[in-house]
Length: 251
Image (cartoon, rainbow, N blue to C red; front, side, top):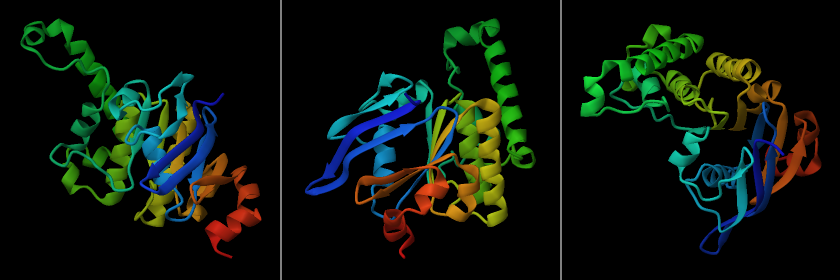
């Protein structure tokens, strides 16, 4: 069993069945990409997996546990993080503050805790050190004091990755992580994802249209069309299948 298992998931909006008995198995410590034409159900599937939508039927299992219908914050607390095609940093917080806000061990502030420095100083030091390490590993050291609103689109995407890392995520789901990013930065982002996968054992499930940039970095590929999975396997094999060529590549 993989770190993520999707079994017979169905999701409809009125008479429109967007997901039609979808199955998927995401191997632990691998980078998996999900492709398909617009309207094939990719983002809806991610929304079901991450708790933004509840399936009409079927199941989602994460790390061996049935998490079907769990809300996003509950999934976040057990190690599932998600980034979006349009980055959503806290615009008035700095890069460092954005990362610190995602630290899952943060106990929050209370009047009682404020009186006993020894109860929280160690946790704050650990959080700050972790944030600093992540900031520099993602080449954000020059902008760590900048507000989220002052960052470029590519930097915002790196901050989203940083927040996911700060949370201690085991699985990170990404919706078009290099959309709108110049090719040089896009290559850098995928290089960082491969490094995090290799060095930290983080599993990634990625929706991406820019296959020329993504394919060299992924281990496994799923292809969707009209709400169903039409192919899966090694990227080179899937991209050569007639169904995928006709439905996704358009030739």
